[in-house]
Image 1 (tube, one colour):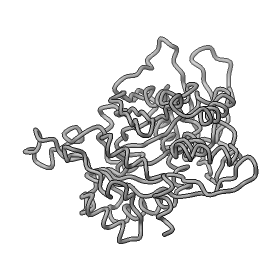
Image 2: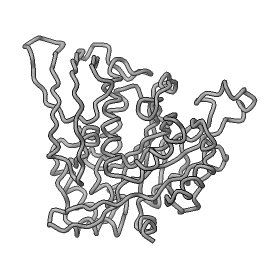
Image 3: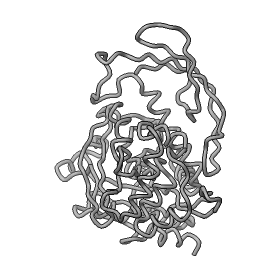
Length: 372
């Protein structure tokens, strides 16, 4: 897919399509923005920016492939990420406040380490439903992680090799890693399986549009009953979170070692945030350290939002949070001058034990600490 745009990104993909000719392949479409927000849930309100886009689609035998670089649609791809982030920031005031605070110190030199999503591993709604979008834009599947206690599995994906460079900030900077997890639904109780299958099976082809749902801030299934949410929460808080948040960004992660000030040290960043009144996830200790000591992570506690269930009951449910990660230089590169160190010289990947504790950022125990 190749795009030309008159704006650098799309802040919200509320768009309608109008075919402007009966050309044979490749097809040419006009994309017309709409400011409608009537389909948003959880009180989200995002306005679309004025823009004009022309899209040319190649045939199956054309140049589109799962390569190591983003072929032609980088502006579109980053626009989708921007829209996902807009939904995330509108729903999560803590994340927005922290980003604003760090920006004020760092003069906008802020990059993301990774973005994370949660899914139901059933009926095609698992990892693959979200991964396809990123694979289409040059991402590469990497290692699998297993969380037996939580009945989860995850895959992470690395961005195109040349996307680690760049001087932009946030979604306009180096492209982040992607971390997608899924609940192993077949391992849950019959009652929980029945609820999850009820909503995924009734959502039509929603599994094909996970990335779109994330950028719109909309569930691909109907809102559940409050009693169903409670049933899932008793067995798996991950399942309950996914039922009401769907494919929304679960968290974004600031790459601390890419910061320019003293905040590049994650310990100093944690202290700075706590001094400014932010609560950090204390499960397993505030700082989560990999066995090799080369990956250190921390996260806030999730915000809560009022959610109206299909039976009319309105209750507070956990939303998303923000994470921080410092990746240290690998031993074989430790003698390199600081100015020559690139992202590939640093520890890559994820650590099961640390990720297991970070999942708890949306747990009832951690969320209840916010008001304490």
